[in-house]
Length: 158
Image 1: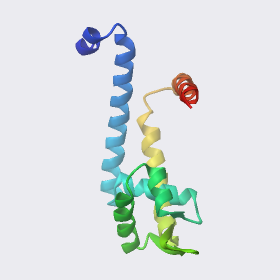
Image 2: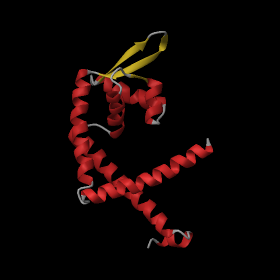
Image 3: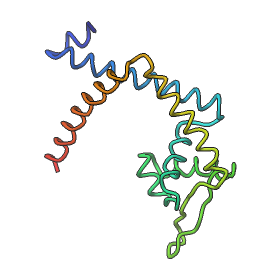
Image 4: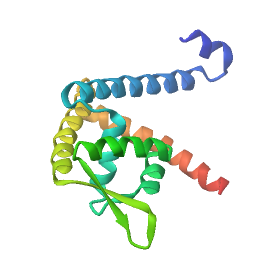
């Protein structure tokens, strides 16, 4: 048992579970980051921005992208500038707002993202190859219970 979890809590098993989930998440994310860099010469934030645009074919305003990605406007602007320079996204003016831009994937961007997304899915699936289909299903359902519990608590606060 983790000595720190054991000495600081009367619930060491729950803490160990949390640390295990966090570690697994970090390991999978590290592998995805490495694979994106090695195979596509890109980063996870760039992939995430393109994923948002893929789900919104008409594009998104910069502030919408920032909110959805939970990063600052400056971060979104920097990533967008890079993707525009590479011909993967385009900026369009927003009618009635000369200060705002809508960003969307170009045809080249959609094709590039589709290739990355297929690989991304394969990487994630292979991360869970060690589990049987039944184990994946059980883990998904159990974590769903934790999610619902926290969702209900959030609603209580509101």
